[in-house]
Image (cartoon, rainbow, N blue to C red; front, side):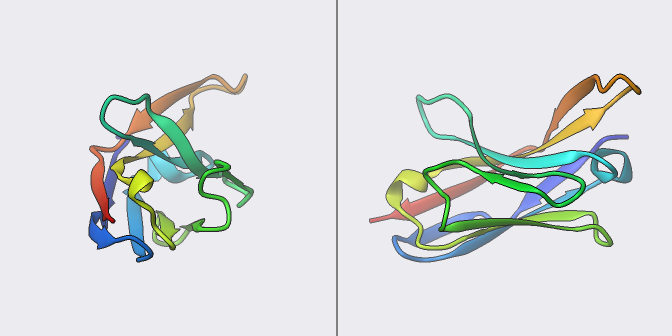
Length: 121
């Protein structure tokens, strides 16, 4: 069973902070890259940040220096600490697990239900 459950979204003023959490099932978490994506109204879903199973991180240019992604392998949880939030960060944020399905490295993308982040100006 592959499950991802996000939490931590909400309404915050510009310049504020939020921390998103993504709790993953063992099948979703173990050995897989986990990422945060976001989708604003009328826009395509975009990668915000991701972290590999070994802890290597990657960030979109628009959030680098403001957001930090981390993973807790004991709790099977990935966090997205968002600081210095801007109105343009407003979106639904989705947790994604790239689940490897065979030894050749084929994978399937699994998604959580999303959590709304709204940043007021």
